[in-house]
Image (cartoon, rainbow over the protein chains, first blue to last red):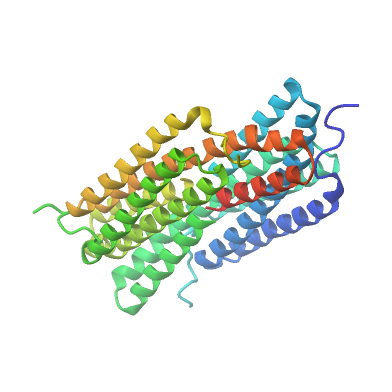
Length: 98
Length: 98
Length: 98
Length: 98
């Protein structure tokens, strides 16, 4: 069994699926708006809403990752703990910069 | 004919549709990753890529809006010009803060 | 007289100077916190406040630039108008990505 | 001795002081630019550079906080571990949203 068999979001998997389906729907809604030549500013408002929804998914996943995967690795100790900490910090930096 | 009959992205409509379809595909890809219990960090990397793609769409739309709709309104002058400038500035602020 | 003799923020110069002095004070406050070995999270909260203050200055300057310099260039027309629009769009993109 | 007597950045305190002094200098440079009525776009470029420098300080502090304070608390276990994890996640969210 791989070390990743249980991702941090396992208990909340259904919530993430629901949120991602809604985000997929937003992407389809944006296509419809472009098809119908909706006013640019109204499209931008929808893009902002979708970006915020995506960012909330990222923060949720990161939070559960830190609380479960990273905390477990730190408790287990050894080089794996350092790897997980470094990897989490890199993910945080990517998220802050995106 | 309404003032918004020709949005700023009219010439590039197909490009936006293609980019939004790809973004919709990324949202579906993320659902598949969650279904298959993919490692959190790998999902986060995909969420970052999707956020960047969305941000690029927003910047493209805003750019064309400023170069066409806003510039046209400024050339026409009157209160409409001020409205369009204010509206564009509000959209820029929303984008910077999201 | 150069084309830039009157920047867009001319009427509000004193407000910007005051805001930038406050931001300079925040930078000194942060040094004091580090000197006194303040708890990391409390420093981060101050850094966030300072980042928001800087972002507000940037949005304010950009807004006045678009409403004055860019709008004036568009009204005057010619290649200068296109240059100013392109330049403003690049500044917006830098701000959104930073 | 308080639990915060040794912040995560203790070993790198001098580096942070140097970086914050440089950021303070950038804030002073911006005031000079406004005084001299520098072109808006050139000021915006400097504001972007300063924002990036501040963001790098925040990411550095957060990284050391997670690797030292949070990891130590997790190894020690108990309610303090949960508190530190929650607090770090809140700081990450503030940083991502700012």
